[in-house]
Amino acid sequence: MRASLICTSVVALCFSFHARAETLLPVKSSQYLVSAITRNMFRLPTPDQDLVLLSAHRGSWEVYPENSAYALQDAWNSQIETVEVDARFTADKEVILSHDYRIERESTGSGLLYEQSYSQIQQADLRDRHGRVFKDAQGRTAKFLTFSAALDLLAQYLTDDGRGYVMIVDVKGAVDDQDPTDPTELIQHCLDILAAKGNPQLSKAVVFKLKGKDAVDVGTFLHRTTYDPNAVGGLIIVENPDDDSVKVSNNDPHQDTVYDQWNGAPFPVQFEMNQFYRGDGLQAYFGYVDQKQGFATYHESNYYPEGVANSAGKCCFGHNTDPTSNAPGGIVPDYRGDPEMAIVNRTNLITTDWPDVVGDMLRALGRRNTSELSR
Image (cartoon, rainbow, N blue to C red; front, top):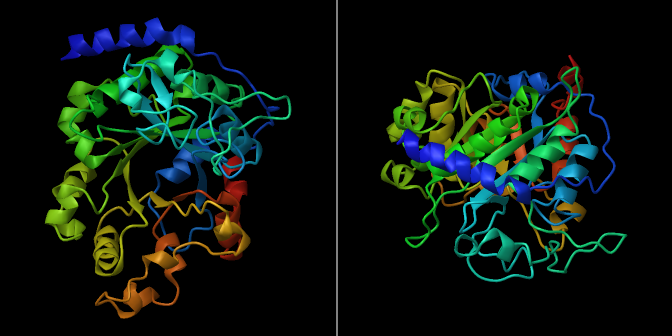
């Protein structure tokens, strides 16, 4: 098995000539310590904490094309301590940043990402969230960004005294029976690319995120990868309500063995809960995390094409309420009428499409004391 991963590493290096880091926006220095960001991300959540971290989902894609160099830089320049990007394979095993496995929505291209080579993908121009082909003030279009180039951009924000930002890499698995993507191979490919940079400080600024069903189990994950918890920023495990393990447990994590076995990992692991948990499922999840280590991140993807969530101030957890639930008000009984606090008291990090809106909400709740990130 390791022989195949060595071959993967060679492929990663062979394709490194594609990845050129181009700083498209001015680099604004960070006041945050990378170690403070990851330390706060992986601690146990407490109800009295005064800092909840923010992560810009796919960068600042309310302004720039998602997962683009522009979007990443703008988020970091806005002092958002973390961005989350999506990693996928092309047909020739280049790792690029793309949320979708079809590229029509994101770009002028068409078809399945995993059936096209990197050179084919690079012929497409990226679109903004309104579907328009993006051009900056100099008339430049935006292209799909390689993972290697994204790392080079992140490195330009890191300083010798340990300040900078963090990038969470959401490793995307196969989407259908024709998709040959092995998510464990993909995360190993990312680890190879990161190691080839030869920058330990950069490695500590990268956190990987993997679905529980793709990670399989702790033993398999460690056997098939070179993951070293002392070398990288950390690992987030995701279980979604549409996963088979969650369906079988009727949305009750108490009956989901993925949670229990990853809780026993010999290194820090945190869980992500997303906005699709509702009503009794949310009640069961809260009951579980209160007994265990809590979840590190809450994924709140509240994208509206015309930005009504931002302009109307609709934020941020209202759609967790479920009027058909047996739980009073569709939310856990002890927090009905205040669903924001039900989330905030149990999380260290909120990933959102609207970090400015969520940031304002957290400040109003006394949960954005970012001075903690400077020490």
